Length: 81
Image (tube, rainbow, N blue to C red; front, side):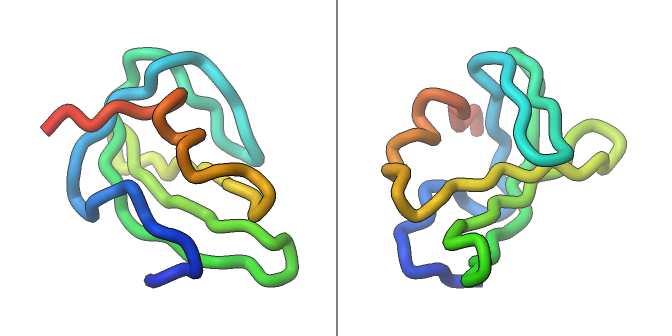
């Protein structure tokens, strides 16, 4: 889905988590490999929600609020393929 901001992720590509962090219901571990699935926009939360799947198709969700720069992803994820 398209959101108002540019999306740095490519559907189906693999990304490595750079550092440990948690957000919402998801715990991200450094070195973990994720596959990007899609994104949605929450008008209620003023946030873009990025959906990934981890090993075993376990879902991971990263929220980026409108007041945060999209470049935040570079501190957390690295494209590997």
